[in-house]
Length: 303
Ligand SMILES: O=C(O)CCC(=O)C(=O)O
Ligand SMILES: [Fe+2]
Image (tube, rainbow, N blue to C red):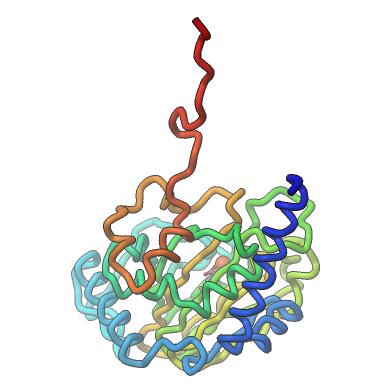
């Protein structure tokens, strides 16, 4: 078999495997939405993540928040004390100059097996591998947003593309893609995800402020998964109601893109074994990159 035949059969194998997985999990309608709109909302009945699991993830995140911030957190009432970020200007808040009303917890897969199990959820992984490349998709980072009543990202809704750091021109390929797991119900007043449907086909950064009037809230029940393309124009509406919006963002990348969190080199291997699908976790983590040592042989002098 020639090298090009071997390459082609690998690509064909990946395509066949992808189709089998999409069919097996009943994901065709969600894949079509991803293609058309750049995002899709997958209900808990389809992801297989139960309410008990959602509550367990939420409890772990609220406990971690309490440990880091120093006061109790509940979904109904939010933080039990007034919080102050000092002069911290936020990240996406910077676009509008809004005062931050959320914080992020990072490296979730180091916290607990429950987060590692979510990271290898078969439905989210098939959707991400569909967008990025069946063999080429890898984890980028695993984060959580804890958001309360306030200005959110301000008037411009923090609209951005996740693959914004990739040099232009962008092709139709998703070089990064994202899974937002909504651990609390998303409504406009609760501070829902905002996006411009179909904007991933414009292959550009959002045009502001015009994009704000094109944006829509993505409203969905607790436990839903919002999966989206790296070029989708998105952000979020401010939370107007009391209490908390809790979201896990499991972010993926093409293997040619640097990870946000250096999982290949720094994630503890023994933790990767401790989850429901260690094989998939290790594959998506991208452990074992060659070229960090003398991986190829050198010839020896003939005597
Ligand atoms: O705050 C939000 O809901 C938007 C999150 C976001 O931009 C992301 O996960 O990439
Ligand atoms: Fe984003």
